[in-house]
Amino acid sequence: MNGFIPALWAEALKARRSKVLPLTAAAACILPIVDGVFMFILKDPERAKSMGLINTKAQITAGVADWPTFFQVLLMGTAIAGAILFAFITAWVFGREHSDHTVKELLALPTRRETIVAAKLILIALWALCLTLLIFGLGLVIGTLVDIPGGSTGLIWDSFAMLLGIAVLTLMMMPFVALFASAGRGYLLPLGWAILTLAAAQIAGVLGWAEWFPWAVPGLLVSMNGEPIEPIPAHGLIVVLVAFLIGTLATFVWWRSADQSG
Amino acid sequence: MNPAIETHNLSKSYGNVHAVEGVSLRVERGEIYGFLGLNGAGKTTTIRALLGMIKPGAGWVKLLDEPIGPNGHGPWRQVGHLVERPTAYPELTVRENLEIARRLQGVPDRKATDRAIDRLGLNAYANRKAAGLSTGNRQRLGLARALLHEPELLILDEPASGLDPAGVVEIRKLLEQLTQERGMTVFMSSHILTEVDRLATRIGIIHQGHLLEELEYDKLQVLRARRLEVQTRDLQAAEETLTRAGYAVKTEESALYLSEERALEEPDTVATILVEAGLPPTRLVVTQENLEEYFLRLTGGTA
Image (cartoon, rainbow over the protein chains, first blue to last red):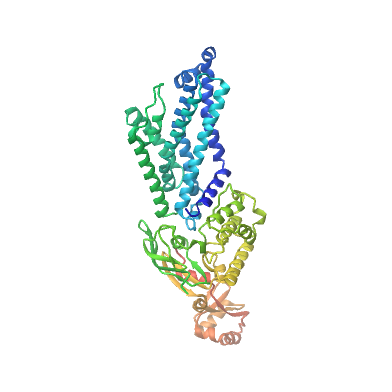
């Protein structure tokens, strides 16, 4: 794609210089830190008793202080918080062009609009995957420091694969956020959409329709109550793929043919 | 040679509002075309349509003989633009903003950024964040971005907006230099009519979405109304004297104005009448309305 590398370079520079990058990194760190705190509390029953409300929260969320539980909480947190965090990144990458009125500088250029959209989507993917690695890496460090029992190399790799799976499936829902950030010319609509789909995913999960609702599919990779994880059925992956393709195509079409007055 | 800009029956509506209706423009290569209109007349909508930022409801646009598609296709390597207020990524420096523009324009020469900074007098601000720039320097940054790739055609919406008087003169000289030395075509909208008056080789006037007039600067000179301005010590007596002599006289503030051809052709006769009446003129001069006055006369001065 002609001009893709310069477009990606431009997007990366904007991200590097923004406060959003450290902000999202800080937000991503919260998850393993809180998970580590829960493990720290639960590891010592006497300490747990003295912690009152925090202990109750730790008991409800985790229950036991071991590596499988630690990873389970990390995966669950990524499935929920990741959807919001990734949506925040996507809303910023696309919406800031409208809020800063810079979109008009991207329209009449030798670099095609499709190339710019592709560069933005790739940057979001790289950014989100880096945050996923940060969550996992920091989780490993914190888990080791807390010295929680029950770890193994196999468990680490399995959990890492699950975390990546959740991140990729969540990322595949981001083109819709990009579309709403573009069409809504800012941040409000995409973030509203992200919250709406997250809530709808919870309802779909409760009703047992998770595998038919693309926004609920990443959550299928998280074991609830220690139950073994069933592989995501093929139709679950297909609905995610279809949603990804529709969202991506709609975003490209919007940039290509909609009136731009930002 | 084909024109630099050509539109045919260009129309764009927003709901029931006809922003632009049936605008057919033709800007020849090497021209400086002044596009004039009151606020809301349709200038920016026309410029957005020229740059493929909006889809015309009807009609078509060609830039440098290439049709502008609704999908953003156009000869953008040869076109520089500045639409409405200049914008920049606030967290990036002036140099970084221009570096992004250079790469997206596909300009391989790394020195192009430095040249643009230098040309617009932004050296002192090159490493400052755009967020801290004054309106005038932001405008310079926008112009630097428009000129960075040395385009053949420059489309500018209010290029002098936000600039101080010295900046306005500087930009005028720069545009003059670019057209004279490189044969660049400039299409500019502006509300600073004195600047357009000094710079433009052709003028288009848009009013309520319609192109009212499009004419060469020389022809414009002919169309601008001329009148004889007379000042004397006693204006009222002079007005009575000239009216008795058969002239149609209009009094404005501290002068009398005569628009009739015979007064314009023979001002010495008017002077003689006044001298014989004991009212020698202290000032007697044929004046021509400026572009602003002509524009207001044509548009009625209302949006």
